[in-house]
Image (cartoon, rainbow, N blue to C red; front, side, top):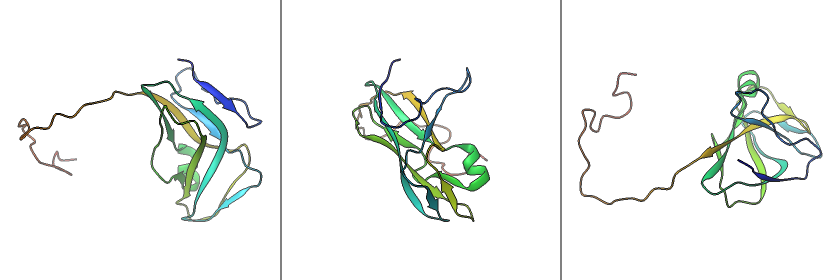
Length: 143
């Protein structure tokens, strides 16, 4: 799949680091360092603009090393970039750690994964088919 990209940052395009990588690192494109205090959120630009093909979405995911070592993660869990969005890719980071964390220009702050998706149509019905589990929810399967 080919994805058109406009790169206004001075950094190389995101790339897969290994032959089996699913995600590509995204870098902060900022004029000044950002100090993210515990429980603070910030919107970090990347300088990247994408034209994602119809039927695909871009998923923004946190970096496991930042989460483990510093408590830095995405405020919205996983971000979605719809295929008709043409604005700059920006990352909503939150500091769940106990110490301030500094984001510098060029730091790897998130990952981009492109995923194929399906569109669905709803069929409004009066009841659903029955299963052994039924309405058993949270913890019902013993986990």
